[in-house]
Length: 125
Image 1 (cartoon, helix red, strand yellow):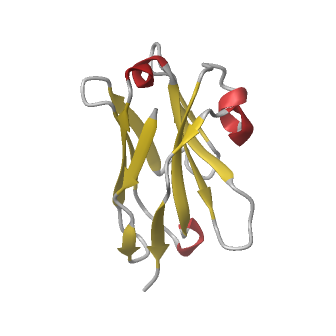
Image 2 (spheres, helix red, strand yellow):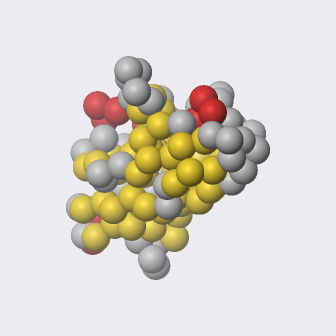
Image 3 (tube, one colour):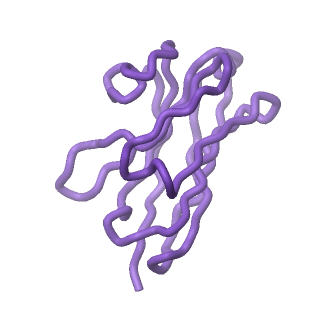
């Protein structure tokens, strides 16, 4: 599976962005997908995930109200809609896919099997 993340950019505080992760490979629709982010000098952290079967969603506390993860099997794409963005959301955002539907394991980067290249989100006035 190959993943291509896009949609990052510069946005003012309070603004919105929608990130996309386009996948190639037939296995994608059988895999759960997640978004992680990594700010300079910090570890990669979980943002959101969506399972492969019933599209159950999982969110980090920081994303629970402001972000929405979704996927489209026909388009082999996962999106992360982000709103009310704040400077602390500035990071490189990565999409990834995993062979698990566990809400616990989907929060752990090491449980993911394939990663995209990342897209930079900068929130600044």
